[in-house]
Length: 216
Image (tube, rainbow, N blue to C red; front, side):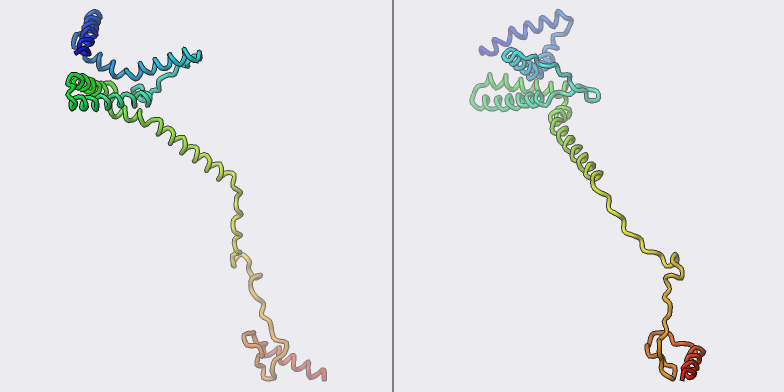
């Protein structure tokens, strides 16, 4: 009950501020949902402020990356938001099982309101895309680096000489034709002693025989 008693003044002052700026009282639920969604951002700002106070180093300002028609959330903040949702849902179930009804109701309400805030202000598909963005960028960088290395290796490799083309028979003309060879001697009957070779004509045979008789 003490926890509920501390929440009532908080919501009462919030409702008063909304009325002063011209907002409706029912906008309190949306503002509360937005505050739950921004819890990781507030915690991150506190951690960075403490780090700057301890180290004395000024933290550089980082611009939020733009993705088409929306602003992408850092993967760490999305992961912490989903962790809060899981912890409050699990805690509500454990408290209800243990008989702590007040804690179970508050935890369950926070889980439901945070789930509605993710649905309305962030979107589950966008949350999944932002959560896996670092892994996709790392894989894309590794793939690009591998392609660049392969391209560099291909360019650095020496060119191989193409095989020499064999000359076409039509381009060499008569030089590729074999000259027929005649035997130095033949039998008196004119039969060639070397089968497969062209036999001399009758005129050449008689001329050779006539020269042989004159030499006698």
